[in-house]
Amino acid sequence: MVLDLKHPDGLAVLLRIVESADVFVHSFRPTVPLRLGIDYDRLKSINSRLIYCALSGFGETGPLKDKAGYDQVLQSMTGVCSFQGEKTGVPEIVYGSIVDFYAASLLAFGVSSALFHRERTGEGQYLGVSLLRTALAMQSGRLIWANTEGRDVKRDMRSGGITGIHPTKSGYIYISANTPHFWAALCELIGLAELATDPKYGTIRKRAARAGELVPKLREALQQHTAIEWERLFGERVPCSAVRTIEDMFDHPQVIAEEMVACYEHPVVGKYRGFARPVKFSATPSPTTSAAPVFAQHTETILGRFGYSPDEVQAMREKGAVVLQAPEDLRPQNCFDQ
Image (cartoon, rainbow, N blue to C red; front, top):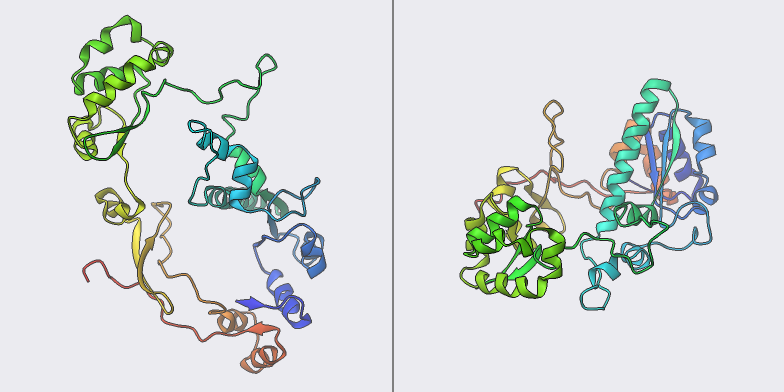
């Protein structure tokens, strides 16, 4: 649904919906809600049980509170890019909107917790989620600085390059071999079993100190097979994965088995496959998968639920208070066999 909140009739629609709403979420900068008349104090006076969640770039206070925040801005600010480019010395963006998606997860977690609290107390409340808070929460294992440590302290557990991505006969493979059990299995399966019993390499620190000796031996051995072949050979004995593209995931047997991809029909894009069902519930049926709605697709339907007659809806449309869009049939189609 699309409303013009700067139009009094559009704002009136929103305030009517708030009367019976459970959750209200916005992603405006902190000064905007008050200007639009949708600030927490006003909405709370209408519905004291409302869970009001504000998602911002930098939070509600401080010198940056009115600054526009975007995923990659926060990656750059909080050290994500520096860590990514540590080996080359050139900072690198992590693509895939990781901060945005984790912010959405924190928002869902916060709202769920607030709803649980409301069930016990009857109280609604205000929640604040920011991209800054999210980017630092993602790195909470790194955001630790003991008083005795210098600025150049290494904040990630390193294995000297054993655990990491390595070239193979064809393609690349990621290997994790920090524990004694996995290290021994790796050495055996690549044909270098003697390394696992050599006391010089008996701990992560010892292996890291002798990475200059070990990594070339490991990579030479990995040239015997392709990444996919090593993945099969390592099986469950060595945590690993061939490096794949996102396109490979659409037809990956594990993804298909978990029903993580669905087929959709969209009036603009057409037929496409996309992600579905991020969480599996045993007792709660998952919602029917559907394509992303087009602009204002459900305006008339939602307004009808809140008592607006077709004539009232049309009048608000003519005033510019609401935007209407004829709904399309967006039911998912089975396109996997086509």
